[in-house]
Length: 116
Length: 111
Image (tube, rainbow over all chains, first blue to last red; front, side, top):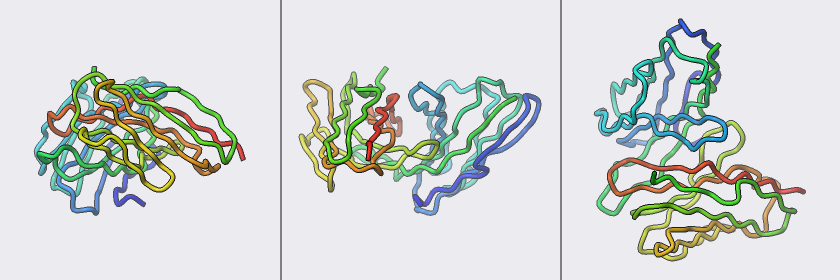
């Protein structure tokens, strides 16, 4: 266990559905992240939150909508997805970046999403 | 892009042998990290090496960093079947919480 939990672990949804992914960290970290992992492609950073404020949005389509109500919880709201959005969605947390550089990230087990 | 690139893409060795994986990147970094991922699971942090360090050890892991060549290597000594996983390097560009991962090296250790 890494201290980061994700639910659900598996999700199958149609293109017209609305669903949400949930992530919770029990590590006292101040930064949280959403990544997308597709086969044969590098891990893609989607969103970054520092102290509940979104600091990075790497040109992610608006059909993905993040929400960070507090430093321990992160959501990814999904609506009108496409089949190419099928992937493993990983949540991670870390301490905030310091002048000395970045800290290691702690990942959840991921949500395997299939869009039909 | 900044993302790291691991080499080789796949590696298969016998148990007890050493496994070496390489990572190359393109721009200056604050530090470089190595992660491991078992099939379909989240990534687990293995080791972090800062840009002013050249070598770091953790158990059976040895990481080197050559900032002049913009490359790093991960050596796993005396490999075990349980080391079978994908291994990723991650770099930051010193611009915040952006981490850049490569496509990983898939390691298979044959018992």
